[in-house]
Image: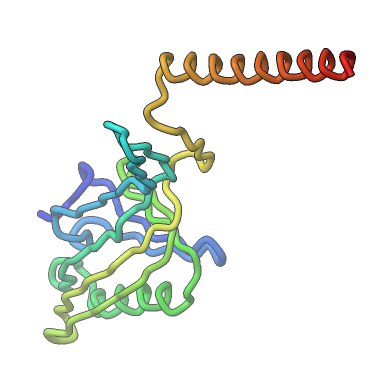
Length: 182
């Protein structure tokens, strides 16, 4: 049995037209689908610093590859494998944004970047689909934070600002006194 996400169907839905392809039962992809992500960031090592300054720029989802075999005998439909190839190929050729939903475990929006059917016959078709996520199910707001951001560095920063302001005030007082003397 190739069922993933405890028997939930894998739904591919075109967000422009609303067209849907539902893969369930024997039509589901094989197990071990990787849905990774990596942190986008900018790291700077300042001269003399013992720790890097890191600015977090958000998360980048990695491509998700689904693979499987569609067999008419397992699907219980004559020309079922060919019909699934035609339906998925239609979504791919439309070049629209697609949402994949596999229960609540995996929900992503993006594009089908590659679809490769491998014909072993009309009734047995292997397939591979690469999905390129462009949006996750997470909130879209990204707040950039400078690291290390600790209470100690925040206090030190305000002390610097206070010293600068005190220096400006002292400088203005000296300039005023200097003008009064001459």
